Image (tube, rainbow, N blue to C red; front, top):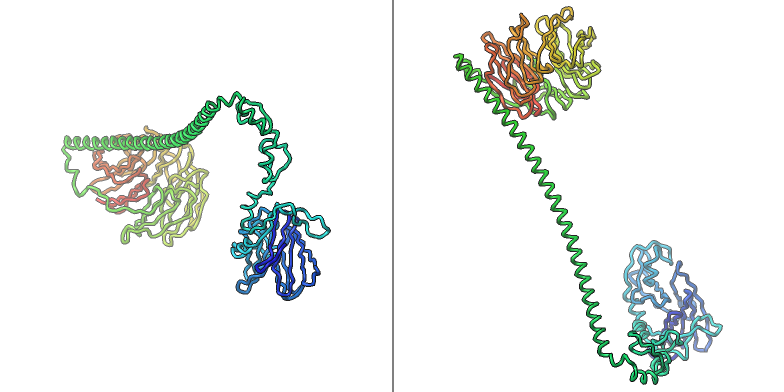
Length: 639
């Protein structure tokens, strides 16, 4: 190996790599040989000819850094790789010995506030911790400067090296019969791919002994395994160069060469066309897949549109039924007007007697099922499916004063006795409320089934449920069970107390009880299913039934005198407003309407249509009518 002013050559190979440094001024030089076992030996030659060997061992899992400190020898000797300083950090370089490692892809591994270390790409990307200080790798950046410096180093071609035969620690040495060229490390691949000393195989027969690229041409002239160029068509000739030329003159395929070539070209064109057709088929398949997806999407959209169409058709059908119901109600109104005209009592339609909606209480989150008026304070109580009771001011502010919470089920019934409010619920309890403080004062487990209705009289509270009426003595805030009235055939949904009598409604039956001895004194048989509502006037007993009918009995004779028709839904509630001149009965129905009936001639004088749901509850106070409905509102009607 020669040296000159520039530098001695540094050599890397797949099996070993030598790095030599230029001679310094005192004649000392250093040469490092890297072996495949992650080991290295540094040979230091001084001016007097003496050699010093330093062995370095590395393992892939630990540090792969080779460093040399000038303090080991003369201060003037340069190290293998001069450390570069970045700010206050010293970068330590590592040279990996494997041939497939690109030295242009050297990485620097930086830890915050630590010295950076430089390693080869593979070691840097496969390690989680730095092999030098075992610190976690946080930042990995490309060390371009080191990579370019390494790329400028001169090395021996790997085809010019052989395993060492001496007892030195170096594993490889220069092969005097190998490639004599030295090249830059960055040009290594280009040179080795075209190196004349690169081992090759005979293209005629893999069994031929290995050759160097420079000897391939001479070998092909002497090779005994040359095949006919038409062997792919079936020619079995194998020989040397001389016999090959003779064979071509006699080969039966040679005369067909042009035809065979055309056939090959045609076959190639067919293959290309087939490949193109395969691509077209694949494209068509993809288009077919997309088309199938679009068809599926269209089917889903069509199903959605059909669903919307069905829903709209159903809604139209409901609207049509409602329209027919309203038309029927209007026809009934016209019939009543005609009857009144025929009877000559048009004067009943005094404009001052027409009820109009004056306002709406809004606040409940569910249907309103019961109403009760406390006339002393002009308070209205409403019970709802939202399990609450709302207290409304009906005199000054017309706002909700308070919401009473305590029930675990729908509030179905309300009743006032003195200054106490009693509420019955689907949770089978009765809660006692103090009206002055609007606070709960007691809770009674009243029935085994929902409490459907409540009424008070003679300091007693009556509660109706399934086939049972319980009578409670009111003692302060306590309720003492006095008696249970039996003999009922179904749900008791209606209770009314008038004078000394209690009226109860169940399935097609109204029972009249004497409050003084709690005995049944009369039974009225009805038609039209269960009795949902009862009202008592000075002269009549009125009940509303499941099958849209309103039955009227004479209160003295207990004889049925009339059946009022007009509603097209269950009659949920009845209320009475009496004046010295006339008595009016109000009926609330599932058909969303209220009707005003004149009890003088049993004729409907007005139909009130303002609710958006079934009207379920009625209450009267000072000539005003309050109606609660499934639309969660309470409306106020005045004459």
